[in-house]
Length: 155
Image (tube, rainbow, N blue to C red; front, side):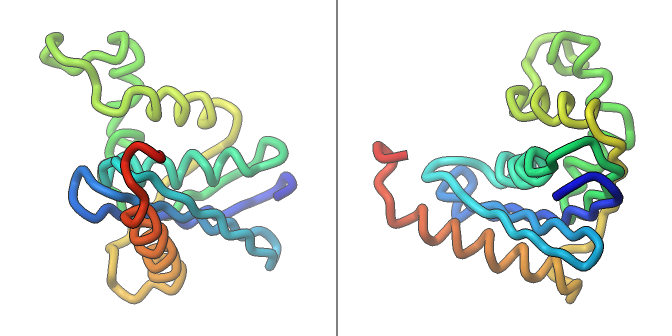
């Protein structure tokens, strides 16, 4: 996708948590759509949700104004409530100062991508009939099923 205003719809899925997982991002810009998806043999739902957003943003060819539409309150809250900024300032340690932020590798990558693009997040209720959310969910579940048939050593 080239610069301009882009909407990125995302979803992640996991069969077992942890277990086989899948993710999907659908990018839309000026009537053009691009669908990306993938998965992992052994992962968590939150990792797949984050991966969907990251891969959607990584697909941009230049800095853009982006709206990420997701059913993940984990991601929306982390960004909108300032958790991500606090984690970064604290050296990726939780507020209890004793434990590391879960998925810090992905949060660091997302933080890097947020610095490049003008990104806003919009939360939507999952499985509520939103056409792009339903498409993302179906693709993420398909990837999860695909990766559930692969042995863990092959991942």
